[in-house]
Image 1 (cartoon, rainbow, N blue to C red):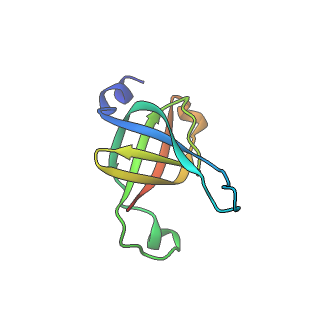
Image 2 (image 1 turned 60 degrees about the horizontal axis):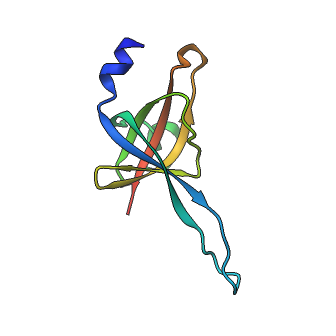
Length: 107
């Protein structure tokens, strides 16, 4: 756990999508700001073509957070001036003190 403490140097805001509908039935959902946590954010060299998916031009990041934190595929992260969409949430039972996210920059 000590090596995790020294690696979490970035501040990241976690936001959750709140679904809603307007009077005419149009989508009126919004991103609800949640907690701000410390994280380790590094470029993600894997994913895409290496996992059989299409190569994308958007930048991908691997984000490590201290568990427990409520993050799912319907979450997004605010980091510096970037919005990061959560593509995958990885929890390793051998390392129950952390959650690793694979994220992609969104406009």
